[in-house]
Image 1: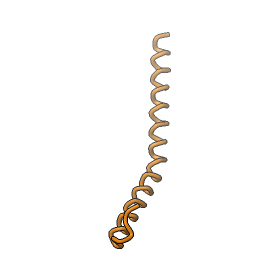
Image 2 (image 1 turned 90 degrees about the vertical axis):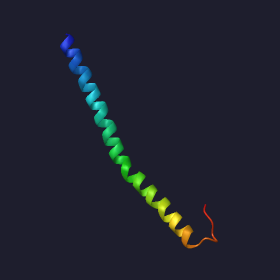
Image 3 (image 1 turned 135 degrees about the vertical axis):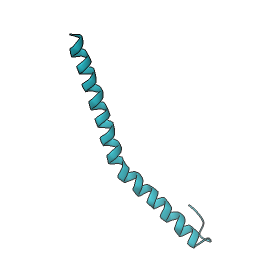
Length: 54
């Protein structure tokens, strides 16, 4: 009985870690797009200093 609990607990943690890893991997594209957008905004503001930074 004790071995079953340990294996069930191990599987629960393995699934939890897998779900977190997949979600972080899926979010990485959005994070990179937002960083690139911010860099593009800063570059545009540096080219035209009179417009200011939003």
